[in-house]
Image 1: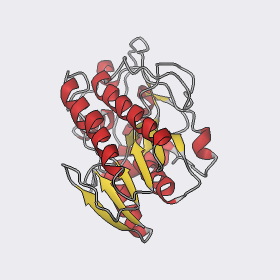
Image 2: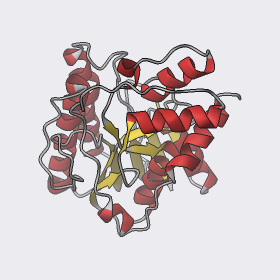
Image 3: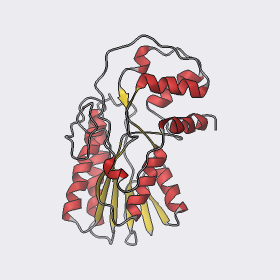
Length: 272
């Protein structure tokens, strides 16, 4: 199979590229501005602009680079012989709830990272339109909070940097909200599966199977790094993202990495 990948140098995209090559497929990395060749069988759209701070109001750049650029890419596919389009969306677009969100749950990402997540949701809508209106097989993956070796920004890199440098960690650093962590290897593996398995279609949530409080995650990281961490103070539970119902993905063979194993692989990568 000839597969093109956007964002092939990024956190998720680089691993998708590696796994595609390992599976014996020919891979083309598409840099911006994207131009599809006529001989591409499958496209895995991993590229996205992620602002340095999710509280920054870079709505215009997020919408331009993520939403409109995705639509333009979809429009290009109509003049090619592309057979399958895989979109790496975001599993954090669902409306906040303590219940596990299925693929049919309401979407309304207003609590955290609203500008970035709104742009991913708009892209998700465009992709879904082409799922119904084009002849391509279109698959959307909605991963929860992706982590693992190669991760450069986010909660885990910030906390592990403090632990590594023996810096004090305050309750405000830790927060008090649940995180549904999914290992990058699981996301990349599913991207390859749905791109190459003609029986897959539609939307799949890709999560870790459960959400853990941030305080528990920090404690696990400290233990794995051999560091002392004792934070007894607490702050009120904060609104966060809904944990994902991964039943539909499990029906096609998805099995998430155990959290402790995934965190161990991440911590070990910090020493490489």
